[in-house]
Length: 508
Image (tube, rainbow, N blue to C red; front, side):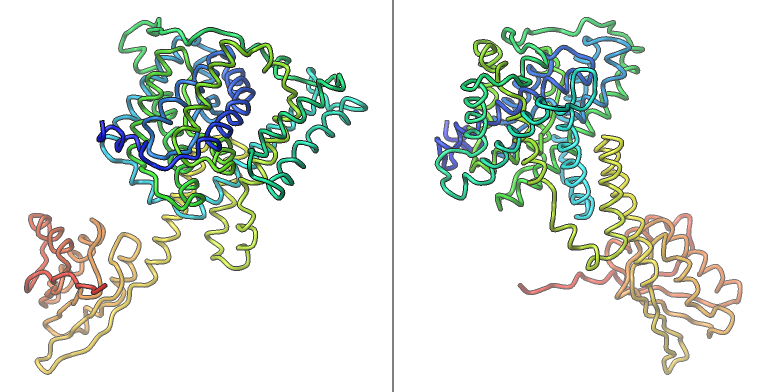
């Protein structure tokens, strides 16, 4: 029993009031989003609500980041919409199950550590782009059913209620933090609308949320190789998008709470959650940055808040749909606008004249791709690739050589900086093959051989010296560089002298 408690992190200190109230607030905010994302994907609203419940519950219990909220997301909806239109919900359920298996395996294989490769400018761009998306998605509440902007009293009413919500969320924490400000704002605006009989858009105007317990369902599809090939690309993208969004959200919540989550454990939990979601008629999902920020800003730090949010959401579907459908959308819109404001990294705007231009370009580009394509995986991938190319370019210019001839007439080249595909041309230009003496010693004490291009560069350099009847020796290779050259011994002709150098011991 004690091992089980330690495994789930239930031993952590819990503020039950904060956790329960924050969970209720998150549940209320989850409803319109889950319904909207399901409709975006061309699915029944209940598929979004069931996904929010199943994914939220499983990840809250088993995930690697207590306090983080998961559910149905727009990123997943955008990926599966084409398949939903062409083949229907049963194929979506199968796709979500396969995506969950991929995520589960990624966690088991400990691929979560690959998130270390995501540079900070990419995270800034991702967060800012997501904040803009959250804000822009709320603008639909200021339109009528035909897509036209509201005017007159209808506009003034919803604008006033949204501003009242935002004012309470901004101002109440300055007076007291006994009750989450976002929950108070929703209840106050709800009371104002009911008390004064104000006619405004409600949750029920979007769709009915009344339903039963998520039904167990084995996807009714043709179990053939053709079906597997059909859903595999969608499943792979869903898995990738889900993991990227989840692990980036985990990192952001880590920074806010000054604690450390477990990325591989979260990947396993996300995978298991999507497998269950597919079998219980859900559209799948991943971590939700906006909802997670609502949760942690309310002071929630434990697993209980996520569990309460998921269970409350199901309770609303089963028993409280009549009341919840009367909630004014203005209150939830105001809440999400405040989430967008809180999500945006305003500090990043002050870096434009202080950070390297390449980092600023990466940050802006990731934000643009996120906003206009709504493809978070592509945005992060583009950012990482550009950052990697910039890094390679900068390092390619840093390789240099110190040269001298010893008393035996041997010319020494001491190499500084990594030898890799980007620096081979500069490396080659450092040598004066025609005018060098008969023996040349290349010292790699301050350098290392990193890839195939580096090995081939050494091989070609050696061949050039051999054509002039001269000998080249390489010494002081790092152990990893030494192994690379020894492994390639059959296809290259490089003379290595001495043993690989021992790694430097740095005293702490």
